[in-house]
Image (cartoon, rainbow, N blue to C red):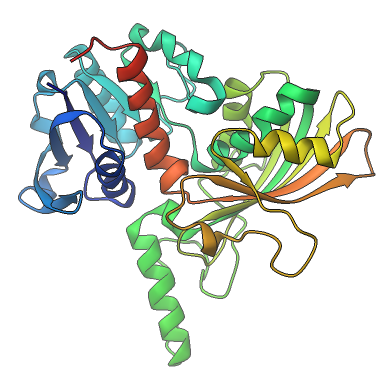
Length: 340
């Protein structure tokens, strides 16, 4: 006998990846429900290689029928439906930003702060961090354990898949249109995304930062250490899948490039590919479909005491979203939920 699982937002980029990941990793599920908005009722989505699931209306679903619900349907849906599911006895793992900074809701990257899951029962809701935060803290956790991070300055290069399927379509259509002299149409982005980069993700805040930049700051502190100073600049780039990050770190203690490489290489879920030669680094195109976060370009920053810089990339739909949520579910059933 296994667990019963629901995926809310099953027709979206991340929802589909959640279903694929559950199947690939042989999650101990007896039954899986695909849920979405009413406009998707009757559509089918794939679960593994052989199974198709019919999509049901999330708003009218009885969540007492399932043990765990993976949500990837946006903040408004999470606001309305997550408490309803939690009150029905279902543990919610939510991929939106709505619950991340809520007191009593664990914000979890299992390899980094898996022990935080012990507090899940306060609200029966667990938050999945932002995709860019996840891959950064994966690389930084072993370094923080070794030399204590004081300050992080990060610039992100985020793919359009982080903004959804319509954003991916916009990049494709603009790129194709430019080659035939069509004027690019802007619908999902504030400026042309094809052959361009846009230093604007999510809404602007009063201090000039965007909410995406704010998320990286507060989430990193909640997951890794509240004393770390974080300054982020988040940029959308014309890449379909895979985020890149240039990270500059200042430590409390001395740390060598060699020790940093070894610490990250030994950390679960992180791969180091760092050769000072042509092709001796990893790019977003190469990590599509990969579970690990990849680190390259590790080098000393001589402008500050105890400084290092590095480049990290990851598949934002996998470890940045779906895989992390499934790993949370795996840890839940292994260590916290009643055995089935």
